Length: 162
Length: 450
Image (tube, helix red, strand yellow):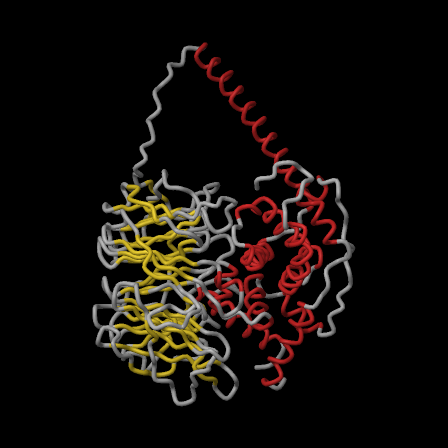
C-alpha cells in the first residue's frame, strides 16, 4: 500500500467497499451461517485489500481477487475477540435467533466442515465448477470433489434421503 | 424416507436464502473506518515487535556478559550453508515442532524406498529414502518465501518455483526457480521466469532439460466458467524461460480458450501434453492437447458414454501416463444414474494419447483413479474412504480396505509404486498425515501425523 497515512483512503477503495462488501458478506454468510463471523471475514478481506490496493494493477480483477480472499478468510476465520476489544470502534453484533425456516437442514449444514460448506455453496449457489471451487478455497480439484461428495452424503443421510 | 428428487431443490433453496441475507446495518461504514485504522494498528504491532526484539537482544547481551564473567569460553557457531543438509524428521512429530504438511500438500513416491512430499502451506519439502520410516527435511532454506510449487522428476531431480503471488501487496510477478539434482541435499537458484501476471499453479518436467510453468491468472475467479492461464517453457533445466502461449477469447485455431476451468497440465514428452478441465454446467468437459511443446493447442474429442451428452456438467480428472504409450483419465459426471448420482467413466490410451477408448463406469462415489499399469488400478469411494482395487483394467472392482481418517474428513491423495506398496495423504485440520500400506490397501499405518 503506497499510502501510509492513517485515515487517508486510497483512490477507488471506498467505491470498492460500497460495491463489494454486500456481496462479500453474502458469500461469507452462506458459508459460515454466522453474522458476526461473516462480518469478520469481510473486514479482514477489506483490510488486506487496503494494504495491497496499489498492487492490484488491473481493476477488473479486483472483484475476483476479493472474493477469493473472502472465501479463504471465511474458511479460516475465528471470532476475533482480542482485536475487537483493542480497536476503538469495537462493537458487538448481538446474537440473533436463526430466521432459517428449514431448521433440520440448517442443523445438518452447520455440522459440515467449513471447506465442505464452501464447496457446496460455491458450486450450487454461485455456479462455480468444482475446479473453480478448488481454486477459490485453495485445494486440489480432487479434494473439492471429495468435499462435495462427502458433504452431500452426510446431508442426505442426516435428512433421511437414503 | 424422503423422496431423493426433493433433496436438490431443498438444498438449493436453503443456500439461496443464506446468500440473500443482507449485511448487518453499518457494516460498510465500519469497514471504511476500520481498514485505514487497522493500518495504524498494524504499524503499532510492528513497533511493539521491534521493541520486544530490542529488549530480547539487550537481555541476550546481558546474559552473554554474565556467562563470560564466570569463565565460559565462547564457542564458534557453525555458519548455516545455503545448501540444505537433510535434517532427520522423526515420526511422530515431537511436541512443539511445527507440523510441515499444511495444505496444499503434494505427494510423489518414486519407488518403494524413495519419495517426496511437500507442504506448500508451510514451504517445507520432505524426502524419504527408506520407505517412509524417516522423512528428512530437505527444504531449501535460502529459497524465496511465498507460494511454492514443486515438481519431482525422480529420486534425485526436483524443481521448486516460488512466487510472491497470489495475495502479496507487491507488484512483483516474477517466478524464482530452484533445482536439486542430489535428492535435496543441495539446491541451486537456477533462473527466473518473468511473468506479467498471475502465479505458478504447476511446474512440470519430462526430463532434466524440458519443463513448463503453468501460470494461473485469476480469471477463474472473475466469472464462473472462465480461466485465464499462460504457459512458459524452458529447454535448459529452468535457467531461462519463454512465454509459449496464453489463453484468450479469440476462438482462433491453435489458441487456448479463456472459457472453462483448467486443471494442471500433464506432459508426456517435450512436444506433447494435455490440459484437462471442465466447462461447467451445459459446457461439457475440457481437454486440450499440444503437439509442439505448448505453443499451439487443439481440443480433444472423446466418445461419450451412451447416457452422456457433450453438454454434461462434467470434467476430466486423474489424467496420468504410466509409460510413454499407456495412460488413463476419468470423465467425471458424464451422466447420471436413476437416483441423480453422477456417473464417472474411465478412458484409456495405448498410443500415447492419440486416441482414447471409453472404458467402464467407476463405482459410486469414485471420482479419481490411480493405475500402476494397464491392469492394476485403485479408486477411492469418497463417501466411505474405501479403497477399491481392480486387477483387470477397471472392469471389476473389489474393496481393498479403508483408509483411516477422522469422522468427517476425506482422503486427499493416494499412490502406489507396486501392487502391494502405496501411500495416502489423509485429512486432518491440523495437517495432512502420511499413511502407508504394504498389502495393497488392506491395512494402513501412519508414518507422519500432526
